Image 1: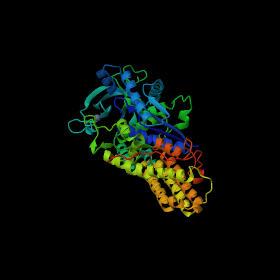
Image 2: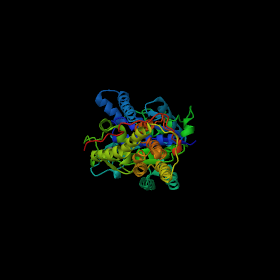
Image 3: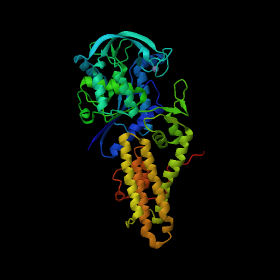
Image 4: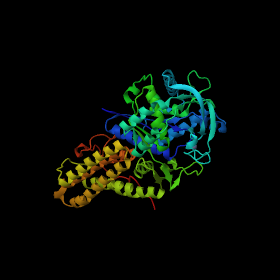
Length: 506
Ligand SMILES: [Zn+2]
């Protein structure tokens, strides 16, 4: 049995959760569920990033301690993930003892290895992004190239990590591992960056104290990004590894991020790991950004799509489906309510929901909800089963490449094939002729077995609906088993079902 370790970034608790957070987390959840279903040992990590100047300032403004602010906001993420049926294995917070211990040990190790020196840091700092920029990176008017807000000139004594020392090795690694950064456009971006100048990285701050102290360096706290990145190994118990999780799961198989934090994950992170003698993750995958009805989402416009609202209005699984189906993972996309409603009515209510209602309705009506066991599949039946097996293989490839929208396209092609199979075999006509009883039963059995396969394929994306389908087909959860038609053994009678996805009014 193989293992699969997937991570989301830990989310900065100064934000309230929005579609961007939900997007990464649903993708990670789909990956984790898919490989669990395939029998892999899976570990899915998410969490919250809680230190830094931005948090300290936000707490001050609210008149509470940074810890109180972190506690309250971290809870909002946990609650949303519960609501969104996110099945993570661990939720790490950077203010936890286990994390702080690991960060201290990590910095200590780099110091002992001679990879850290004391210098002076002076540069342009974007407080909201917790990121330093060099003069040449700024936009005209000294604005942050990421968020376009004004930056501040900060000068302070600082410890530096000799990142420049690892530039060559990182470049080598990139060239040898084209899958280290995905999609390809991001790999190219990182490669050009590393081919340019990689400067030593300032890893401590003295201008505030809401952070993890640098060992034996009074007044210095760890730069929030170094602190945050280490969550991916601190959560596994690095360095002591009391439960053997680090040994079992590291290196990560895939680390999902938004493209705005590519440099931190594809440059700083591997260099830090190299310095500590820790293996690099297999793949860092950067997805794109969402716009809202064609407009960039921003704090000033107050136009972030709120997952909570979408779930209440359209249902959780419809929302999970839409964000995975609408846009190719890795590319930018637009969230449009019209497109969302269109997909609910056509893909979910019409294609999938009707198929389930039709099949369960006919099994209930013509067979009294039960199969008697007589089945002699013919050419068309075997073609349908081959269609399911082919879809299964295609979907697996999509999960290997994070092409979730394609996986769903393939599944919907098979839903189309099953609908067509029913139209061609016309069970309602067979039901009129008692001599066709066996044929009727075979046709309905093959249709139901196809739906069982569809439920298995959809579970990573829409776990709640897939479980409803499973139960409607007379099966008992949890979902499991092979795709083959002969793996379908309903244990309970099948009756008419409520629509899986009610149609929305235009
Ligand atoms: Zn900024």
